[in-house]
Amino acid sequence: MPHTPTPMPRIADVAELAGVSVSTASKALNDTGQLREDTRTRVKEAASSLGFVPGRSGRGQADTRTYTVGLLTTDSFGRFTIPLLRGVEDALAAGRMAIILCDTRDDVLRERHYLQSLQDRRVDGLIITGRTTDPRPSIGLAIPTVYALSPSVDPTDHSVVVDESAGAAMAAEHLQAMGSRRIVHVTGPERHHSASARALAVQDVLGQSLITPPLFGHWSEEWGRHAVDMLLASHPDADAFVCGSDQIARGVTDRLREQGVDVPGQVRVTGFDNWDVMAMASRPPLTTVDMGLTELGRLAGSTLLDLVEGEADPPRRQELPPRLEVRGSSL
Image: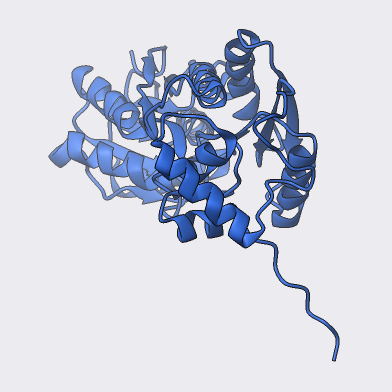
């Protein structure tokens, strides 16, 4: 019979044997963070007994830093990654660190390849991001890691995210303050965290002013246009649309204009994301929620620096408040 090779031990196996979290095991093996000495010893003994080596090149406490960081993303178009990357670069410049950008294209095998390659290059840390705010699996490696925008499902990992609920609430409150009382919420697929979280916030704020249940669909202009056709047929007295994305809002404003409805004179519209390509090209320009992705990148970068240098133990989850950019579509 062919010989089946024994699977290589993972950092998660070391953490389980030592009775600690993956994050704690990573710190113990890299001699970072503020840990009890007996915890470090227990983790290292567990790693030794399992034959665990962090990366094929191995990393020991005597190794020197490479001053490089890997940034893995699933956002092939760069819509979210580019502004976030600017902030990461701002923060890491203080530590004289360079960034290696890797696009996994939502391919698990490609991600594994990049992770192994980055380990072999002995990067000092990793930032993991993507094009959605859906929680993602932890990579479980003994390398300082920060998850940005797309948080880790492991609460012991370090994640920096945007308070999307607060942003959606801002948009809804703004429409009410402007006098709208018959409001519709049009958003993306209900299975997406962004759509469901924003919808719940809108419902909490608007209450009876929300004249239909949230309309879940697609993150597209086409869906925005279709939603207008449905709503005007059944609720011709609707006076505002709070949209889950700028793409949807752009489709809504275009279709309202085609139907002879004045925006914002008869119907006000808000978006979400502050994507210039959509928000500023819309007629009129969109009032929208800005998630502050560059600032999120700065926070991710500074958090990673703290982990790499071991001088502080940042919170496991950090949440940034968004802001509302008020423009012509709601005034």
